[in-house]
Amino acid sequence: MSKRNKTGVPFKIPLLPITELLIKKYENHPRTQFTGNLMPSISNQRLNSYLKEIADLCNIKKNLTFHMARHTFATTVTLSNGVPIETVSKLLGHTKITTTQVYARVIERKVSDDMEKLRNQLTS
Image (cartoon, rainbow, N blue to C red):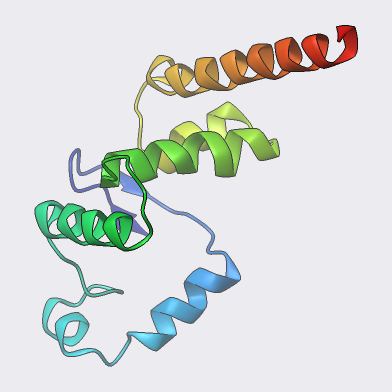
């Protein structure tokens, strides 16, 4: 359990096994010891800087950001794998389901695009 940084609203999320491993890995890290957080944290600006370095090393031309990672989590990891939109909304800390529905529209567009590709393959 914790509280959202932006809103202060309490939340409780069951952890996936990989997350539990990462928490254990960093439990004795000086930064987690000092702050009392489960993981060492860095600023959004620093995180985006690291993502830019990773993109450069991997020859990725897109500007990777934390916001993009959050969006990818919502669409590719959760919604595309059948997680209900209500759950995704809670995971993202949205107070209104309409905020999360923007991500669902991306999925609908992808379904439409994929079906168009299939239609073209079947007719050629």
